[in-house]
Image 1 (cartoon, one colour):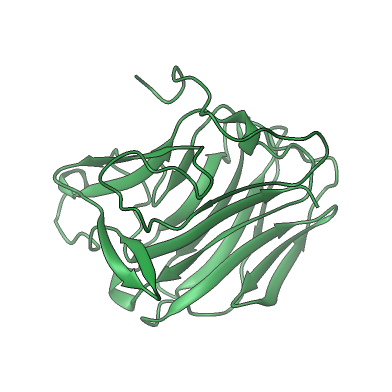
Image 2 (cartoon, rainbow, N blue to C red):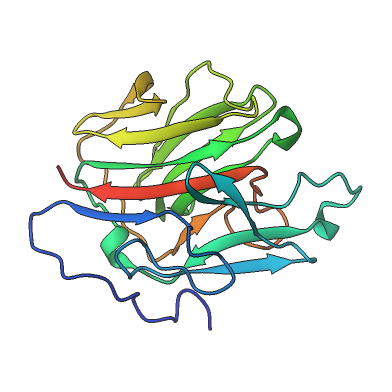
Length: 231
């Protein structure tokens, strides 16, 4: 069953106008569907070419480690693995403020032209998107938001987080800004049109934009993924 034909993931009751949050700590493992810390919004592991997720210690809990950066001559032969949810319209913020992010650990060997931490939607084709990534050989994290009516907005600080240590990365969408926060400190921002709306039928994906070739596969470890919608 595809992510588009699957039923909306069950979650907790939402009160109109109240903030809404999902959070994943991965402490229960990744060998079966993974619920958020309150028991809803399931993710499932997907892989190709033998790509698999594994668990590594992080603090008093566990984090998800992704396949090592592939060095095979043909990218289509590379192992790939991600976490993917089902269609979940409660994760569409529309025009509301939001925060989303994760803790990541990467080294220089994990870097590539594309390395997606989390995303929902796409930046082309009139779909709309919010995304967190660590791209290119500089190890810069960045936040990306795209609207269905055009316009791609990216906040990228001149900071290298691919140093083998854990870093907390957060993206904040306010009324008119997209802000990149690294380890609790705002590091970059760009103006954002207040009317920009994010709503799509795509599932939440963690570690890549899918398991197929050209998926901007993440290499390294991810923990404490969260999405908060509303004030």
